[in-house]
Length: 139
Length: 163
Length: 206
Image (cartoon, rainbow over all chains, first blue to last red; front, side, top):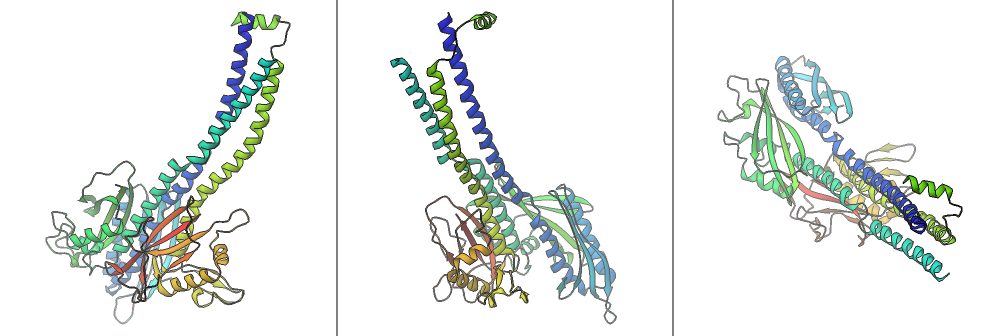
């Protein structure tokens, strides 16, 4: 009986040591996997392309519409902004391009420059930018 | 005494074996499987965004996003030029295209290319602004009675996955 | 269980034999040595992770930024006209606007990398005191795959962009971007998609 107990204790001791080693190794292993996932997740989640998409709409479609009269231009940009807010809301983020000032030229009453605020909130990022746009481009 | 030496030898052998196994495990498989599939998702997503960006911007081209949307009719089948160009861009991957737009403050949805995505699929989207005046009256986006400059905002969603 | 504890507490002889102590100490010593070796291995794993991130970062610099140069007193984004001067630091972005590349910048990037690979490596952030990565950057057609590369050629048959170290047969990270090339009159049979000359910018880092 005594001899048998000796054996058992040895086995238990070794089992403890080996399991301890395996636990430490697996902890380090999972940490590595998590680090890798984290870095590629940042690439996936960061809304760089969405923000750029909003800017492109301002720089292309809004500027192309500057030939409209001021009230037509305001109606146009208001509609675009409203639809964009609705479309982003369904994805659980907030995106908006709001024109908060448009100024007609004295001669033609078409828009000569306008102020726009680009907002994007989502993916843990809050982006806010205000620019002034002329037919040649935005600053 | 002989037994004790055997035990020591056994201990050394056991230890060596254990280390050999862990070493080869970490050397060969590394962290490749989970990490690299995640990363190739990121790559695929970026390609999808890049493709949409390339396709956007020139409504006079039949294979651009605007050109495709303007030529849509109620069957919602995109023109062949567009499909060819898109397939050139995202080639080995499989894809699905959905569009969303707002009509009377309600979101409308249509599926242009209906393939069933796998669970690993990633999505990219791009918002395109059309003008009512550019649309054919038979177009599903056409707002009758609206002014020619009335905008129609369409979100094109491209879902891609490795075939 | 209780009887075992009782017999243990009443026992007058040690349960640990010399064999066990010797075996255990050998085991633990070799474990310490190998764990040091292991930490080196984990270092490799970590660099593996950052490897793909570095490839992504370089692709963003090249495909989405116009670049910048400065010599302390003057600066600008036209690094392609100034990179070869003395004391000039520059960020070699190839874009006019995001994902639209400038043909001249591409050519000058090729020249700059061929002239001083090590400097470009530093400027792209691939060489820091803790890390040192090598890279290869090329413009390939949409048909190109890692196994059969198809470079974009100019009208004289020379690759438009194919620079950096030769790609070795080791673990490497590869990141592709689809880019438009503005002013593509010098490119032989470009792939045109919705009126734009399109190619793949391939960044390989190891």
